[in-house]
Image 1 (spheres, rainbow, N blue to C red):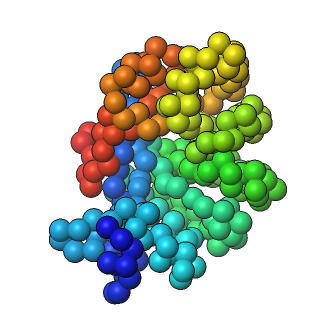
Image 2: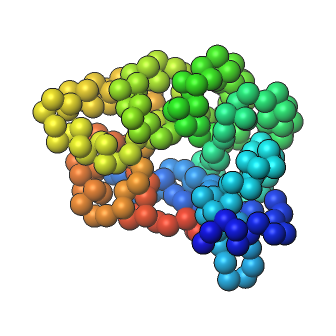
Length: 238
């Protein structure tokens, strides 16, 4: 669906979280839920972020969207003993308002360590000083940080692992391609070893078929996520 279909009458209140599980590869139990924004335009139409984020950017409401999804997810999972997380942007890590929001909201939130914030690797490297400062805030609040979407920045995984983060997400295809290459396999092994030593979780994302699932299952990867495991849903089962 094209963004023009939602350009009229767009409201932040129409955006709700959908939940996609990240599971333990060995036990297949849910480790965390990623909370993904969806626009409920009417009873029959649900829009992906690619359909409406243009509107959020246009109105400069990125941080407002982050806080909106965070509030809804936090209340949904308040009494669920499971990890959950939302995606944040460069605007969020650079904004004092986001820090104030997190400190205020999590002041009396039960077990804040269940909360995870995901930030793209490109944002980390583009705003390295701001990320370092934001990371210190997260550690003080006892919330977790996961670095996502390496893409062409895979060679910088060792740099990311030097940070006191809690997890990294790597595209499952990248993982299996590296594992299949004798030239690159040692780099993957080294990265996984370093992550294990630093107590950093490795999540294989975009697992879309059984073959990829089997490939990831045969590697020392702790967690997996993708449509083969589960599509995002409006509710979770405990």
